[in-house]
Image (cartoon, rainbow, N blue to C red; front, side):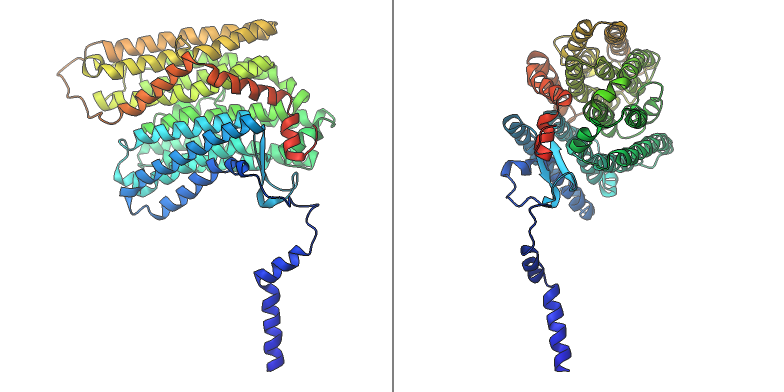
Length: 536
């Protein structure tokens, strides 16, 4: 009995954490793991991901206490935004930053890697999430809160920030799935028939796109033997062109669907008019931009020269999407559907920048993405305010909102003109950059790109002017209706208007990091050196 007991104690000791740690310390880990301490600033890379992710879990556990949900979410997103500001400062000082999960050395370990492009988009995402929350507090009922609205909200921000931060292509797919799950939960919240119909269209198309993405990732892994983005770039630089071209076509197809580019855009107007307005606003601002970002990261940075074969196709799709999206908006009689088609048109403008295939074109596309995140979110939110004031979103039912709420009328005009690219708002500068990049590039594609940018802006101006005249300026018909309660909804919109005007007056706040991000896409040697410790 005694020997058996002693044997059991010895076994437990061998399995104890301290014993395991002692045994592991005896192994030389230098060849497989980072042995030095992680720099303090590198922890900033995971802050915009970990904080909302943990917050989503905690708030889900506490969903029976709706009174704390909004305040806690506001606190978490404020910390996330502060972390994103610190992250941008750290990237500006130190260049790309990498954090290896579990300290396993890349390319075998999973890494979170962020450069100037990713840091800029993480900051914009966190900021828009924070401002949108200010609107959501006055636009969310208790049933939605108990259903987990704020948890899904934080999970959506987590997924988008994770997509902009990851240095591993499979984890890019994982983060796509994270925000797809969150967005699907937000779409069906309320359970109305029209919401389920929109959710099905949204879910099916996005599932097809992510499946194509996953197949492309598997094929790319088969060719390169690695999932690390920096390592993929170095391997593809020395590989035959044919396999990456076939795989690149799958990536382009998947991301064009995600971005809602013509002719695969129909799911977006069919689904964005069904959810709660703040949800539609976040979708319009953020989700389509992830597809454009993925095109920049994979087709431009990872595939390098081999990816240039896809750029003319992306440019042509961009021109068609920009013009047809604006024409689609002109044909709508519902404000939400009109705004959804303007989102599609904006995606086309960003794709034109990618299609130019130059550093100036990429920089213009990045600046346009930042502008569009703010402008499209704001446009949907002010439309929600209009619905609150009049009870209608139809252009066929004049609302006379100008006489009821002059501030709402002014905000709609600011956001609409910003979307059209008129000065002095934020949309003017990226469109000017793209036209200049087109003129500098030359060729048929460049001319088509410049025409597409100008024509989409002209059509968008008509769309906004027509909607403003009918909804805001034209007196309401029939008996006067009492204005709905809009208290509390205007403050986030005023803040967004200040940002949009501020970026129009001081555009270098975005242009400078966007140009740095574009340089990093064309010459990712600093990114690769940060991850692999060697020149690319």
